[in-house]
Length: 94
Image (cartoon, rainbow, N blue to C red; front, side, top):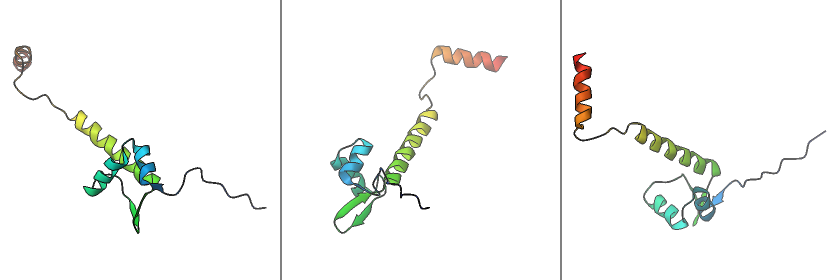
């Protein structure tokens, strides 16, 4: 006996407005991402620009990883404070 086909709750593609809402930016900002070869991958069919939900989610995940890496490798710059210099001297001595 065949089971009834599952109805997808999410469409196969998103319009630019839907993708922008999903990302949390304006449609104009999404257009600027596209113009600068940034942002999620998109599909152009004639004049229409469509996004696959998986591509939008992958781009968001990629952005989160890049930001986390930048914060993890953030080192303090500039001269050490007197307390930091004294701690380094003590550590070097013994």
